[in-house]
Length: 495
Image 1 (tube, rainbow, N blue to C red):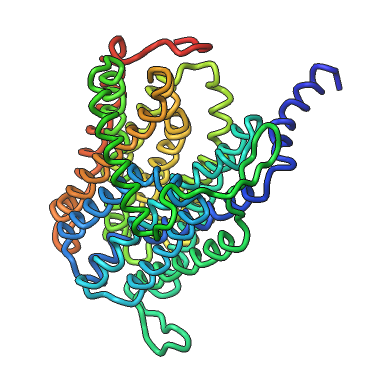
Image 2 (image 1 turned 60 degrees about the horizontal axis):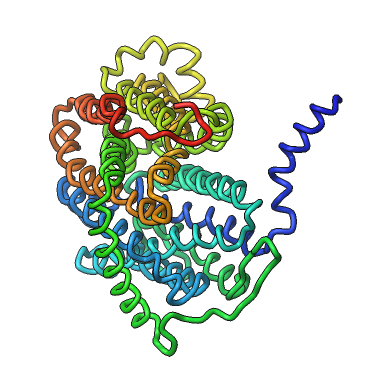
């Protein structure tokens, strides 16, 4: 081996070896991230709409509005909860979040009356979830040194996708075992719960270990610095106050800070570029939330009860992203974030059109080796393979490739465009387009299903994905047309 090759190999290995000696809290956060995302995906993505319609007996339209409201509240809580870390610390914030999720998922698992399940289950779940993701991001930063930080966040992103893959596999396995609208007899309790309640109950069981890991494993006041590990007693922002009071007071402070910061941002020309950038990106993000809230009902109605919905989106998407994202990142390292986002959003938007055409166009592929591999070798189906399986797999594969281009770079561009010292404000406000995307998709998903893919009656399901695809194309088109206004030079890269 030449000296140059050895140096390159050492450099590559060294990127991972920097985690040697990392504080145990960092590894615990990686483990809890898998469990957190698994539980979230089991409840808050594919299952949610099905549970609302099947167990709470809401119409497609009503279920969509509930999803829109819940997703919006979740995003608002996530944006506002950052200051809570300063108020009560990382450890207590995570314990509060995991505890709320346990109680919320218990309620959703055993109660199907809307007046109980929604205010005492779904609403607390939004706050519980909000007390996890941003706090865990802060934890990764606090538990890693400067050298460890880059690879630590890369592994954190990978753990997230592992969680989605586990949830997708579990979602299909439970439905295959119990049936789409079956029941499970809970041991020792002598009661039966539905298939979707069983999936939510599994989300609860994935959450309980996080409570134990956090309570017994995470030390309060730990911080990894370049000079070594420091353990300092956590000083609460509001000493002597209980959790609820501290949360209320810190939320009040956060609201005041956001009002002041947001008012100031409107005076900065760069902020309008920021709004334009994410305003266009939100159109391609619509696809993801349609895959969460519209796709499961669409697939079950078109492919039949028990269709492996989780495998053909969640599992496939997660596996491709885990494998391909680092490769794409390495290949596009010298590309500007703006160019990479344009490429990625175009690939992602185009992918939807595989489902916007009649499945009959894919009949030849379904009858050939590709259909045999997808239907029989991978999904374990029997009999002829429905051509829609081929269309969906092609769609998800291309979608995932596009995601590998644009998604990891989305936060790099706001950081590049933000004035010095205001990167945090810009990055935090980048959550707002997701609020818009979730609310919009939740609001229209039920209407699209009722109009073009009803549970009974004639269907024209391709129209749903034609509408979604055309809207998604506004993202790359807008970024290209207004490139001269939105794009700024990014140091160290070719534009």
